[in-house]
Image (tube, rainbow, N blue to C red; front, side, top):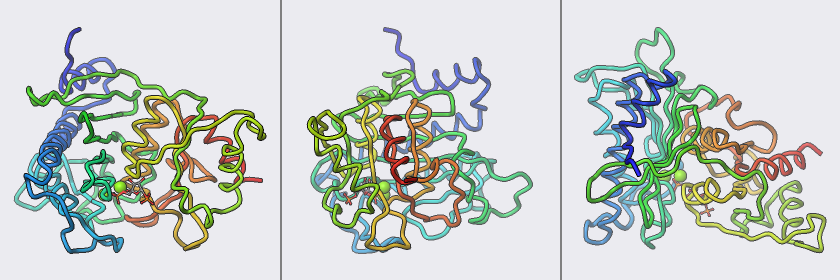
Length: 333
Ligand SMILES: O=P(O)(O)OC[C@H]1O[C@](O)(COP(=O)(O)O)[C@@H](O)[C@@H]1O
Ligand SMILES: [Mg+2]
Ligand SMILES: [Mg+2]
């Protein structure tokens, strides 16, 4: 089989569809290189002194792990000097990070969740990185947070890496979804799955069931109906999986279907769920839609949600189209 590298793929895409200008290709390559560096650090585990808590909290009030901070630094450093970006934003930083004046500036904005699934770091379960690329608004002078507040439909690229038994990078630039596997010996990303498609039907769901007592009625009804199995209204048995790393749960769904849910619940009515819109839900929604699936917040398409702030949270229902449509329809009743 002919090996196609990430660079080859990106260059060929540009030739065929004219959708990945050189600046964007270089940006994606730098992000992919950062993921390779993070993967290397993850792989060292206790030997690299990357495990454990950093003893600090991020803007969301979550305890930061050492690897959250290390990954954030790696992404910032690698992407600062390339000349493709105007600014970056991250789960681990309260404000945006404009490109310092000593470096050339570019026309893109990069957002990331540097390390997704932090609770799994110390127990050697798959974790990852999620990223989203937006175009900086025309005529923008100094970048501000407001420039980032574009709906997900405006993303020009999105992807995630999974640091698991294999390290993979899943990418969309709006023309389908492709998966690259890191060849650890060669240090290169090799195209291993072209045009990934999520099956429309599924018998598998993912939700943190320990929150069941707080769920709102549409979610409770939807999950109860699945749990009732063959003898219930759905007339089939469902299986459940919950990895607690969104990257790993989404990667399973891209490969064999399923629905992933992190709903809003009654604990904190002002907070719509746990996941963050701009660097978790939006990039994953873009990928899932490009793979033929659907992604809503229970009421509307996630990609149409107009962000009000950088670290905004959103309820998430994504994956196999027919299931996402069903649970979304329950919210309308
Ligand atoms: O701990 P819970 O409630 O199971 O939540 C798990 C969810 O939280 C997250 O870990 C949030 O990501 P971070 O590790 O980046 O904060 C998701 O990846 C995952 O789906
Ligand atoms: Mg996350
Ligand atoms: Mg994170």
